[in-house]
Image 1 (cartoon, one colour):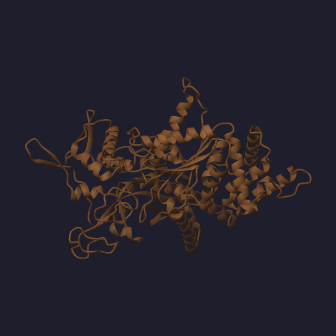
Image 2 (image 1 turned 90 degrees about the vertical axis):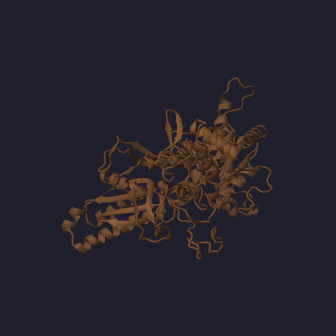
Image 3 (image 1 turned 90 degrees about the horizontal axis):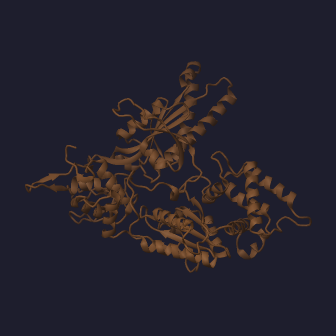
Length: 614
């Protein structure tokens, strides 16, 4: 890394120049050291403009008398970093009466087991235990390593903590029927905090402070037993992943105004980012800008899929925030509106849209998008799993009805069994497989033998193992039958996180499905090609659409569309265009920052630059 001040070559991880001492760009969100010229973090995409606007390029608003009025300061203390994190406080009740009747060493052993169990759940989801306060645990998600889904991770960790505590109580009650049941209440809040610089060095002795921490602690203090309370920013970031119950605004100690809060009820079935509210600024949404050609190509490809009755897979490739999910939403809305248009001639059947998302981490991720697709087809409730006999029967009946409607001669029990094995694999549940094995034996035609099914034909020639090929053939048979009823658009989001087995399955389906209209839409980041360089290469049914950055003109149009005005002060427009570098999400985040810090203020329907005292 070359210092822009003295031109000295420094190590890539240097935070300060070894010759002149100039500070390099350390991301306030994830702690990554960036090149001196970087406007956004190369690791997480966070705008580095807080320091740039406040310390390096102090913007000024010209006055009529020729003097300048500085913008409100946006600066950082050199000894600390600004991070957007999610903070969790979890406390237990029932420990006081427990301590009254137990030996201190026994009590310490119980609390030690409890703390270790909670820390395990927190770390498993990428969080860090900052400290223990009495019986309470304070954890932070976003330090030392930031993830774009830290609010999501915090809530998942909290749900797992509740489940772990329930198991912990059961174990203690089994040993001592008179044991006191421990109960936990949790508060979670997201926001900007000040963290010591050591927080980016994977150290455990960092300290974070800020209003986000205080609100999380207050939410925990007012939460009912066995309840998770979250603040507004956490709710907005996760409202389409979890189910919530809104509470009346809470008056919290130390807060002048009531605070909005929500109770977490559980995980939603459909967690695809495509169906979520667009990322960006609450209350501000812009039309799609700069994607006319890409959208036209998607419509043309789908029209060909319908006309030729053959599958096609489109990979939408682009950096985070470039607009992949927004483009898919626009495409789906347009196709559904076209299908509903009764005045259009030769109107084609409305597509059935099935959606799933590849999660970045966790257990059972291999075929997780397919689980979400099946859940939507069967209207599965949150507490149901494919290891229950009722759900197995429902799915088998659904497969049987689908194959009958398609006039397929395939065995519905074997098709359902192969698919169920894929979605139930994460638990290693042998009861599931035994149930289906018994059912197969009951329904097997006289004289046939195990393994003689069409699902297992030609496995030797395929080069795949028998069970894996049976799985892929089952999905092909099932989707072909489903698409006989109406065209399918199958969205597999975040394909860069897909397991190799899922990528193999998608390639197989796109190559082998015949005589039905199915379009696979797969938004992905460029990381996909780091481990799958030949993805879609040389296949006639594969198309890759690369989403490039918006031009300066398109970015300016997006700013106007977002704020519903063209009267944005020129100095701010210039700042936004240069800092965003054509990334729509960065545009929204910069505008959000300017509004939050009162640099940009709406007054009487117009936007203006705020003064230092506002």
